[in-house]
Length: 184
Ligand SMILES: [Fe+2]
Ligand SMILES: [Fe+2]
Image 1 (cartoon, rainbow, N blue to C red):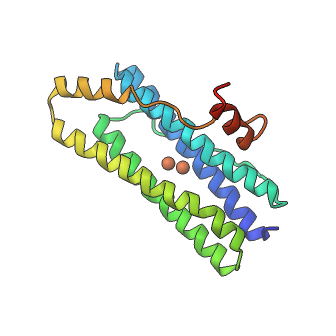
Image 2: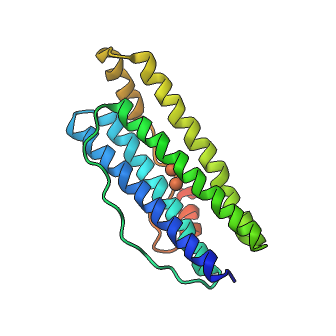
Image 3: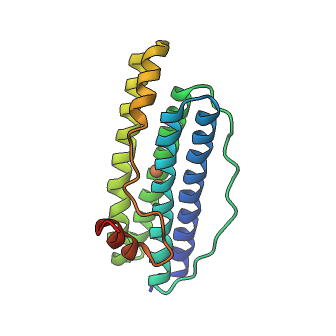
């Protein structure tokens, strides 16, 4: 079982992850509008990753006998200046998410909720990876500067990122992972 307080905090994190998905979907849409198809694809891959983050929390809350309560998702910005603007905003948002995860870990510790603390470790590692990815792309964009030919090539490279997470949660995440790894 999880406490009511923990249930509420995990439900808030479901909302944060759904907002992340929504934000990256907005960035994908703006990229597509501007002809940056590779970046658009990259952000849609990221959208799927965030949906998995939300679903993992969703399943955990239910597994622990809690109640999932979905809240309204804030409207993301629809207009971005440039890929650099997007990745700087992405990094800033991920730093906020990292803080949220750290706060959740602190709450789990306070409540001596070891199960939730262990569950959250996956998110702690995931956040390190996400911030590193965003920093890498910001570095690439800095190198490119105003070179549009180089931006064109980077856009092509970003198109190669593939979805590696399950996207059909109708039978649960575990079943989806099994289906994926069996190549079905
Ligand atoms: Fe996330
Ligand atoms: Fe994320």
